[in-house]
Length: 427
Image 1 (cartoon, rainbow, N blue to C red):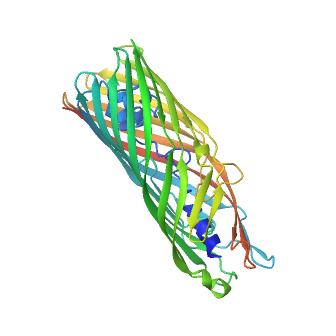
Image 2: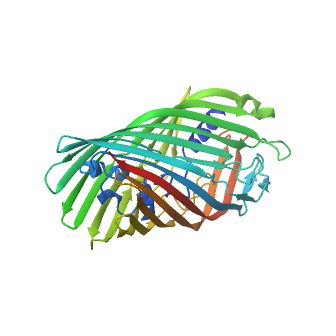
Image 3: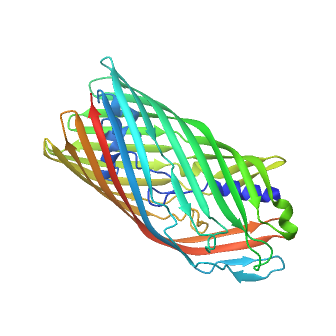
């Protein structure tokens, strides 16, 4: 029985998602300037604030540093639509508890930092820190969603070392290697064998360092710049512990503290985009990303005495955006853009822990030149995500006489806002 408990909690820990940021659990708030045009031209732009999208972006940027903060606010409702629980013997009852979860996706702040320095006339080195997967959700202890999720927290820090080269007058190349630290923690309610008994609780925490790479190129063709990049998938291996408590009667033997590990892979990202300086004041941007979410096909869980594999069934998706930059004068530049970002989560098996849906992102922003070497970026983004259905079945204590099945049925809807502020300095 402990084998089933460890498997289920470890798998759930790795399914944490960011509904207001980007589809799946990818956090795309990596540039304040980019947020202002809905991330529509980053792969073809120059400077350290575009390092996440293209390591070739610093080949011509000179000595430059960037720091940004993104404050994320989410207004969402996750509502019960007929969820049930079936106890041993076949008795099926509605899942009791609060029928609606208001704002389970927690507000937060996502930081990023980058610095670049030329090495001679043709080379540049860069260092950047990003948080590509960073999210927290919380449901109340008596929520209808408690058998799927109570608390979920995922924090990552990506440290990337980049090298770029100005190959010719028109071609730049770049490569980066990153170390990614991941820390996760979650809790989930486990049913006892009677609706009259309080739930048990399972908690899991784990962390680990893993590594990936990225390559990119930019072609500067007069008024047009084309950019392309590829960021590798990252294989994650989290080591941690599982704590199960509060189970009584025949289930009491499953209350324990054990060690375990879970392996999963985050997606590769291929990006293609262009930037056209249409006039001295107006630049038009377009960008397409193919995100390899099918890498997140299964979660491999290992522990003393066995192991399991849980299929996730995520699908590859293509997102795209268009935007513009308009230089009002030599001190002020305005931006705007729109992006469509579909969800990779499978219809028919979407969990309350991943209340994801297709979304549109609308961004506006500005850059003010404070001095010849210091610029302030600001942006505001609105995310409108489609209403989506939650449908997820879980068999607790599977393969034993205590097998208990929950059938989660719900609906999620809402919207998000992101306020971003950043500084860029040349030196």
